[in-house]
Length: 105
Image (cartoon, rainbow, N blue to C red; front, side):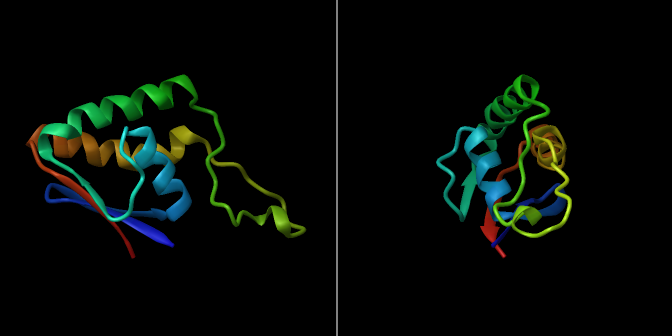
């Protein structure tokens, strides 16, 4: 599953479902897909996500189907790197007082 985040003031961002749901939960949301944040709730969600990233920037956050089951080298991607595009989208939405929505794609 893929999840796409949308707001009227930023480019759409698509992530692996497992990664997206984790980030949605870190924003303080239930983790349901589809979902949305009202414009008034975006700054608080952004702050929660930033706090989690600051507390655990190097925590690996990879899709469930990472190459670990194969004989390939697994490259771990950190929470900070996975969250960066979503943080940028949330910052743009907060600055423009716009909503954020996400859905499976």
